[in-house]
Amino acid sequence: MTILDDIDETKNYAEALPEIRRYWRQEMNEAPRIEVLIQGQVKLLGTL
Image (cartoon, rainbow, N blue to C red; front, side, top):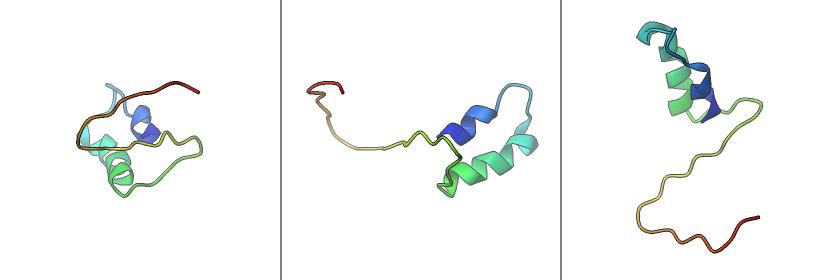
């Protein structure tokens, strides 16, 4: 998910497209933030 953090309002679509493609290929950078998509309900029972 952090791959997309490098895309800001100064980039146009063509400039952002390589990073967007990296995201959809599920590539990770040196400090990844794992993204999990679920369907249904989640109940948080506590924090670490």
